[in-house]
Length: 88
Image (tube, rainbow, N blue to C red):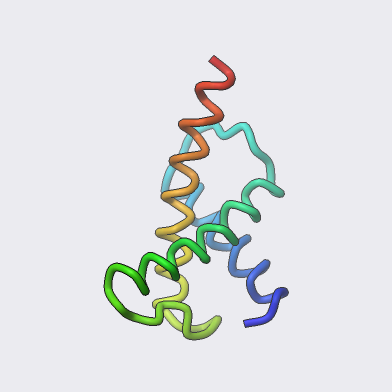
């Protein structure tokens, strides 16, 4: 996938992750995109390491979206822990 596809996938995966984990986040849309892109990479890496599958096959593959969303959820949770401690 190209860089534009990763940005679009990251944006959408980050939005879906925020919908699945409602609550106040200190970040805006840029943080959502960055968490989504990093989440896609994390999800793809975890799929390869844990299940020995290539979970980043293509933009329209379900496995790519699931990996990106799961990775985004993990990173969003970690971001909330770190950012929440900083603001307390």
